[in-house]
Image (cartoon, rainbow, N blue to C red; front, top):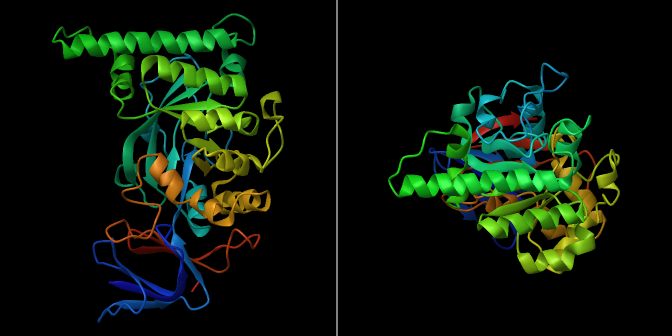
Length: 383
């Protein structure tokens, strides 16, 4: 057993506990959270003067599929030969040996939702993983997590550059997605009625979407693309998350009516294309104040994953409530991606993913983790 004591504990499930403790069981789960926790025989970490939080959770990135220090040989996240590839699975491209995993853990990020890029209209399934391990099969929190789809300039840029292959326009992107959803619905209905249609791997991959088991994970920056994703999700009765949501400030009131979670970012870096003209760290605050459920994302490697807490801090400096900024990188992404039963807060029974900080990373630029614990194991330490 391991007892962390005397820390400023941010549970993300209630009020902070000053001089608090977190007890971790031998099973890698949180056994107790509170004050004056006694545990005979436990190893002790004295966190006096330090902040103790859950491990940070990234709701949208490509870690492991786009490897560091590489270009073509490390880019395994876009199967850009066909705009419709729902049968691609992130787990088959993830390289846990990439240095970005260790970098993320050293900065307090312990879980990530990672998957295909946005070259395709439908790119394949995301997976939620822990950020330590040698074999991805042993790192999985949830798989499949979501089905990636993309609107706007990226699919057009990949397939329509020379005007020879669809999608060339936004209309075509929407039409291709609708066609897949129509076929998927018919395929599922046939299977459920006992007709056993001819096997189609693409349509098989879409069954969890059609059953509402996983959402469409919609890459959408511009306001009209965001609304198109919502229009199609409603048309087919499927779940949806709004990933990037760059124009969110312009339509925050409308998005609040819909209730879909917005995964906002990456806000750090240059405006590399016209869709990003409204990119700003104030967007999370505008959406939150309007009542939109938000998480903050890095879209790593666009922004390195280790800077997820920094991005939350910059959002806080730009108007997002400090406590909400912490929620936007812990309990919010965990809950909104469907893994909140295991990660995102310090609560009894959840995975013991705990970070002890040198300083508050939302207020101190460059603050790193003093100790990072994943499932009860110390995976990074400055001691």
